[in-house]
Amino acid sequence: MQKRTLVLILLASAMSLPIALVVAVDTARPALADQAELPGPDTQFLAKAIISGRNEIELSQVAASKASQAEVKHFAEQMVRDHAAANDKLVKEADRHKIKTTGTYGTPPLEPTEQARMTKQQLEALSGTQFDKAYMQRMIQDHMEAVALFQEQAKNGKDKQLDDLAAATLPTPHHPSV
Image (cartoon, rainbow, N blue to C red; front, side):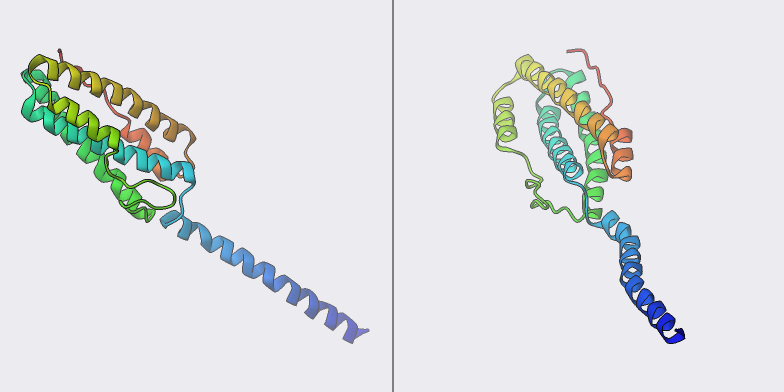
């Protein structure tokens, strides 16, 4: 009887060992996931936010040198500073999750889209108040899209650090008189 009890205890112990190992592995997993894995929607947010920021920086660099009104030039310069700072934070977050600028985990390359390149070419073809108005209209449209993107992430994202960054980085309104 004692031999049978000993065998049952050993068998029960042996059967619980794999479960203990799985629990130990699962416990270690969040640390790895925190650095590399990111849920798909969070990854897409990062890609869209970085691409959008880079697009706005490029358009604002053009406006900073080409705008005819001082207010528009000042606004464009402020946009370059603000978006460069925000993008630095977003790129660090992407690096933390091993998302490469060439595209990773189903994200597109983190560079301007064909549509953004066309928009830039169209703006560069304009001058004077026509340029100023077209640039400002584009910034208003981009701003509204960015606010929606960042609010969605802050509200529904899965990665707490990324959600907090999205909330803290929510675009702030700039109101130049054009």
